[in-house]
Length: 313
Image 1: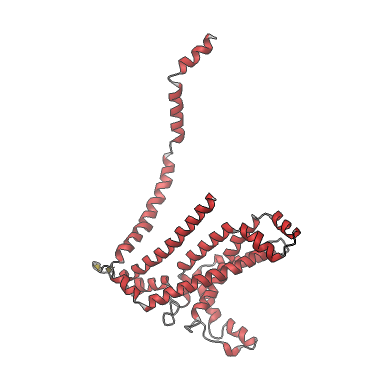
Image 2: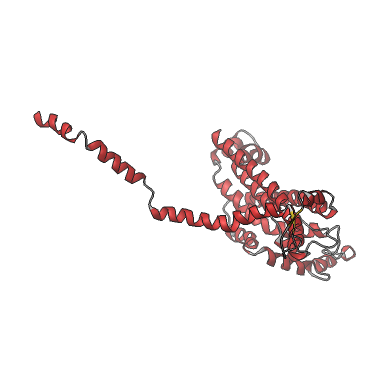
C-alpha cells in the first residue's frame, strides 16, 4: 500500500515533463522533410512565380528585349480593347472552349459507357482510344496536317464516297481551318475524358441501377437519373480540366496553321506567342498573357469553391 502511494509521488514532477518532451519530439518535423518541401518551393518560386510577377510588370511597359523597358501605363490594355486580332482570338477561344469541351466530353462519356461493361476485346479498344493521348500535341498537329493536305486521306475518302466536289483546302480556308484543328484536338482528348469517366463509372452503385430496372425505368432514364447524379464529382473534374486545357491550347494550333490563314485560327495563347516572341513586342504580349492568367484563375477559383462546397455538403 505504501509503495502504491509513493510511486506516483516520486514520478509526479518528472513524468509530465518527459511526456511533453516525447510529444514534442514526435511533433518535430525532421530536417530532411523540410528540405524536400523547401527545395521544390524555391525552384517553383524562381522558375514560375518570379517570371509570372515579371509578366505583370512588363505588361505596363513597351520593350523589344533590348535596352531598358519604357513604362506606358495602361496603354497595352487599351490597345488590346481596340485590336481586331485580339477580339478574333478571344472569340476563337470561346468557340474552342465550347467545341473542344462539348465534343470531347460527349464522345468521351459515350465511349466510357459503351466500354464500361466487360466483353471480349474491350481492353484493346480502350487502349486504342487512349493511345493518341500519349502522343505530343505537336506530333498530333503534324499528323493531321498530312491528313488534311490536298489530295490527302480526307480528300481521297470523300472522292471514294462520291463527294469529291466538296473537297477544299481545309487548313487554308479561313472559315473551316479552326474547326479542322478542333477535330484533331478532340480526337486526341476523348481518350483522356473516357478514362476519367470509366473511373467514375466503376464507383457507381450497380444495385441502384438494378432497382431502377425493377421499377420499370428504361436505359436512358436509368442513366440520366441514377448514373449521372453519381458522376457529379467526375463532371466537375472534367469541366475544370477541359476549360483549363482549352485556355492553354497552343501546340496543335501553332503546329498546324501558326494562327493563319489571315489570323483566323489565332487563340489567345498563339497570339500572345506571336506578339511576344515573333514580333518581339514583349510588353503587349505580356498584357495578353495577363488576360489569359485572369481567365484561367477565374475558372480555377470557381472549381475550388465548388469542390469545397461539395465536400461540406
